[in-house]
Image (cartoon, rainbow, N blue to C red; front, side, top):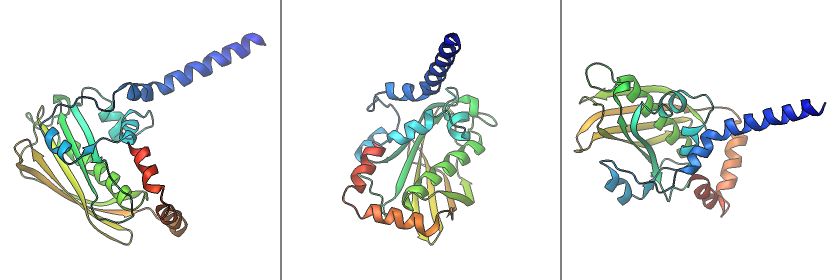
Length: 228
């Protein structure tokens, strides 16, 4: 009996240690880790940084195509960061909601020749739009209804690019977004527009709860601690 209990305890400890490894890896990385990319000055001037919640998502063992299959694959990106403003306030409206993604894709994700596979770029923009829509609507999940990409220049591997996303407007459950892809010389390499639809679960009750929280003086302070 004692051996069985000891075995179960050892198994449970081993499982917990193994499951916590991705999060421990994230915590070991310093918050102000030195970043070296072509848009570093822009990110610093705009007072943007990658929130803790993004670190957790990118190191999460939960199944997610972008986080598990791409970001956690050390061969996929030479550099990948998602940036939000440090002074972000969640007010459930579209005003001043922006998000930036800086990436440098490795050769393992190329398509023809030395260009980045277009499907990867679509995935990055779609995921960024989803995160931005979630913030702009006051933490209501949304799904992609329409996504359109127009490529103007080839996106190459082993080069830095910036994806700037913003909310154009919100009409009911519809969230309209747009994005521009820049190279290090500020040339426009691609543009994207999208329509996201907020999930109709919880409905009015969920929205009322969020609105109530937003009216408390500690709400945005709590969001700041959660994000950063």
